[in-house]
Length: 224
Image (cartoon, rainbow, N blue to C red; front, side, top):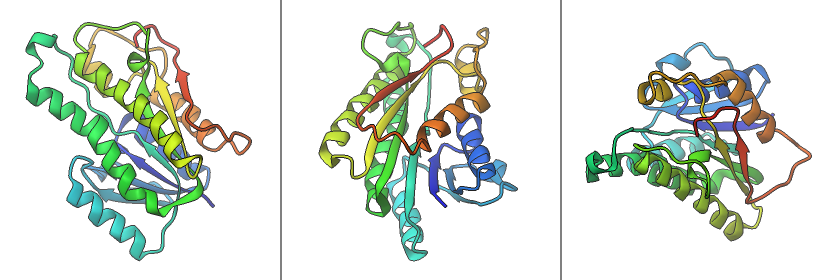
């Protein structure tokens, strides 16, 4: 039975990944600042962890080590978005977005790597807005650039670890989450969190695929 670790798991895509993974019989480890919504999901252990807090991450990983838990799949799903014109996007806003989307992702991955099985996989969730030559939108300078950084980081780690474990990146288009609604209140995405979560899990659990260092686009909408 595979063990999957999901960050940003209290709502939206992350919550759906945890719920569906549980239904599939996987052992699910979920981390989020707020774990209340996760109560009641079977085969799930929830830990209140802020990915921007290195001390909390280290304490969490020590707990897993003490219980002899090994990870098969790490899904770095935690994300943060602020939509505003570049001239209004202060250093503090840039830092807050990068702390979650880049630095937190890197810190969690580095800390968990020693307990990821060598034939396991790290999946970084990014946005098609971070891809080269993709359509860009005003107001997303910090968010889109942070997602571009995640893409490059994934490619470098895939080379550095040579498939032990594998590193891949899923670039999502717009999904009808609370985060999207807050940033674009008048926009309705063509895909709901449950459907996107299924696509992510299908990729994560595909035993026939041994891809490494791939950036795979999952997009059904116009807003990137």
